Amino acid sequence: MFIRNSETLQEILVTATRALGAAMPYHDARLQAELLLARTLGTTRAMVLARLGEILAPDVAAQYAANVARRAQHEPLAYILGHQEFYGLDFLVDRRVLIPRHETEMLVELALRHAPRVPHASPVVVDVGTGSGALALVFAHHLPHAHIFATEISSDALVIARANAARLNLDGRVMFLQGDLLALLAQPFDILVANLPYIPSARFDRLPREIRDYEPRVALDGGEDGLAVMRRLLARLEAHATRGAVAFLEIPEEQGAAAVELCQRQFPRAPVLLHCDLEGLDRVVEVRWTDDDRPPTAGKLRRSTVGSRRS
Image 1: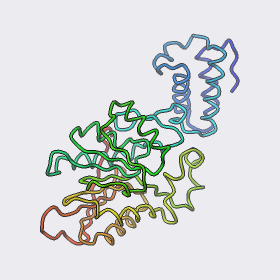
Image 2: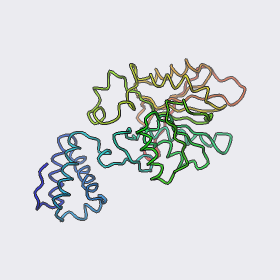
Image 3: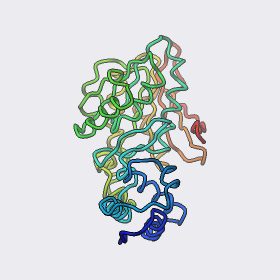
Image 4: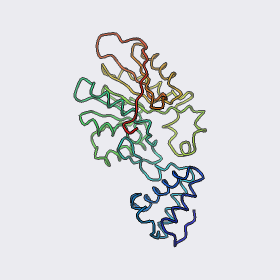
């Protein structure tokens, strides 16, 4: 994108919007051009719109052009901006971690809804594969009396997760454990959430460019059928579950039946629930362990629909 030295912010935004418009609708292109300019100027979008008649300094204009070029090459906006909002909190993100997504907020909704049912004041909540730390830190924010553990195999991702804990003034509220799934977890859990890799390997190269070329494959590739990591987690769950524990596992919309079958095979006596989003798409599988001596209904499957608090 070429910017003349005498151009105003308004003129620069028009040029940037055109550069981005080939990849997205005009409204999205304009919004992202404004957000990128705010990022470059170290200010807010509102302040950018209040200064449209100003001239941009040449060095700042060059930096802005570089950021627009990155977005035009399909680099995710969140990576260029350096942050992403999730469940009302703002998280640092870069290419070391998966970008937190709106649909994953269903895990938060379900876990927070269940927390008051835990029969003691300080539930143990575990986030498996924490990435940026988004889920674990949201729980730390909303459940001040909970003991929260977050596991992650990637040391690079844990750098970001710990930075987010410090940024949100939640240092010390989450115990971060570097290891595979539940390998280092010594504490039995009351509530477990997991947004595991679930893209089948054969589909990876067909993902949108901004996902396959930029987001970490280790956080996306779920093996041959997309459920390989989930299988390994299910094999370890019961040994770490308290009596009355519950696990919420995010799944791809096309894998609901297969994920439920896996859970029922692994835990034939446990109720299994399939939660759909507001569009009716399969989104989360829930497994419960009985909290009394009554035998649960074998292989019981129920569906529910859960919406985000911001929907």
